Image 1 (cartoon, protein in one colour):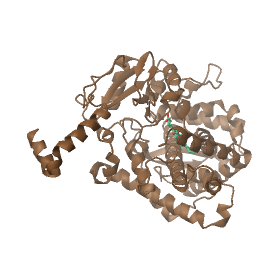
Image 2 (tube, protein in one colour):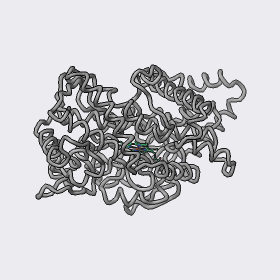
Image 3 (tube, helix red, strand yellow):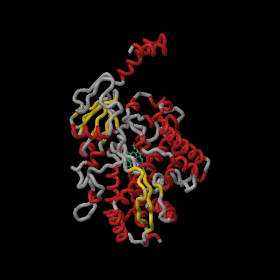
Image 4 (cartoon, helix red, strand yellow):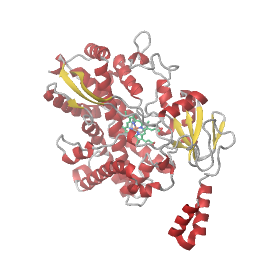
Length: 504
Ligand code: HEM
C-alpha cells in the first residue's frame, strides 16, 4: 500500500491529498463501498469495492451464469466492482421485467462509447439507437421504424428487391459448381445489400474492394464481453487505444466507422441518392427542417453504423449456422426439400406469403435460432429508477441480464432441448406451434429494432437456397462455440452447394 501511495505521490506531487479526496468521493458516488443492499436478489458474495471479483477475477464464465440459475432460480445476482448485476430467468419473469419502463435502458458499454467518440471526434458518447436511452433513444428508434414501413418494408416491392439480390447470390453459388466454399463471410454482402436498399438506396457489387476489405476482419458479437471486469472501470473507453487486449476489436470497429463515414460523404455528393426514397435521404430532410436538434449529422451516422453492425452480423451468422445444421442433419434437410417441393414447386420462387403454408420450414428456421442461441444473455440493461423484480428491491443503476440461454435450452420448455430438432416448434399434427420461451430478438421495450427485417431476410435466403441446393459439409474448422459469456460464436467450416433438379 505504501509503495502505491509513494508512486501516486510521485505522479501528483503536492496534490496527493486532493487526489485521494477526489478518488474517495468518486468511489463513494459509484457506490463501490456498499456490498449487497437490503432485499436484493440472492447470489454470489458481494463485497464492497471488488463486488464478486474475488470468486471470479476475470468476470463470470457461461458455466458460472448457468450455475447461478441452477442454484438460485429465476433471479440471481453478483457484482463487478461497484456494478451490481441481476440475472433474470424464466420466460414469465423475463417478459414481466423487460416490459417495464424502469428496465428499458442500456448501460454505457465500452465499445459503444469508444465507437461513438470515434464517430463524433469526441463530441459525445451517446449517439445511434443501441447506445442511447430515454427520449433520445425513443425518437431515433421511432423515426427508423416509421420510415422503414413508409419506404416499403413488408410490402411486395421490398420483397421483389430482396429476391433480386438473392437471385444474384444463387447465381454465384451455381457458378461455383459444387466446389467447397469458405462460409465465414459468404452472406455478409448480400444481407447488407437487402438492408442497404432501404437505408442508403444502394447495393455493393461482388468486387467492391473497400467493402470486401472491411468485411474480411469484421468482428462477431462474441468478440466483445461487456462482463469482463476491465469494461466496468469508469471512463475506460477514453484509454481503450492503449489496452492491448482490445486493439483488434477497436481496429475492426474503426474500419466499419471509416467505411460508413466515406459512404455518407459519397451519399452527400450524389443528388440522385439524396433525392431518392431511402432512410438517409429522409433523415437529411429531417435535419434540414431544424425542428429537433436531436436530429443531426452525428446522430444520423450513429444510427447508420448501428444498422450496419446490428443488421449484418447476426443475420449472416444465423444463415451460416442454418446451412451448417442442415448439412449435419440430412434428414431435416430432406424434409425441408420435400415441403418446399410440395408447396412451392420449381416453377416459382418462395415468397414471404408462403410462410403459413410451410410449417416445417418455419419450424426449422426458428429451431436454428434456438439451437444457435446467438444472444445468450441479450444486451445488458440497466435500471433507470428503483424498482421491484420478482419481489426483490432493485436499486437504480443495477445491470440486468436476460437469461435467453435458459429459455432456449431448458428441458422444461422444450420437447427435445439438447438436439437440433424442428419438432420443438411443431404439434403432434405437424402444425407450427409458437413457444413462449423463444426470444432470439430479446423482449419488451428494447426488443430488436430489426426483428421484422431479420425474419423476412432469414426466411427468403433460407427458402431460396433450399429450393435450389443440397448443402454438404466439406471441412469443419470449429463447431458452434458458446464459451464466450454473452454471445455464441458461429461455426467455421467449408461447404459444398450442389444443384437440385430445381436449379434450372
Ligand atoms: C437474426 C438476426 C438478429 C438477431 C438475433 C438480433 C437480436 C437482437 C437482440 C437480442 C437485441 C437486444 C435486445 C435488448 O436489448 O434486449 C437487438 C437489438 C437491436 N437490433 Fe437486432 N437482431 C438481429 C437482426 C437485426 C437487424 C437486421 C437489424 C437492423 C435492421 C437489427 C437492429 C437492432 C438494433 C438497432 C438494436 C438495438 C435496439 C434498442 O436498443 O432499442 N437487428 N437485436
